[in-house]
Length: 109
Image (cartoon, rainbow, N blue to C red; front, side, top):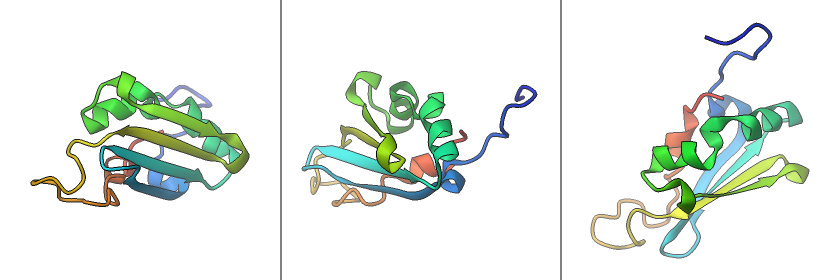
């Protein structure tokens, strides 16, 4: 339950204009989050759901492995973490890392 005056929890997909993922080499994944406006960006950077701990839980990695870069001048957050499998290894269903942003779409901020 939210406290009086607190914004209603909203899914990331409704606050961001762009949510995308891609490889940053064969062993690393990056996720880019671009926000519609400064209030949405400020809400995102303050949310524990987008902290290293919150993101780590979604992706099954350790919090220490998640790097977050806040980019206020472009209202963006960049996340970087290791891929579960090396790109192209047997069992890798997303060689380019282009679908790995999906777990974040429904995260409530």
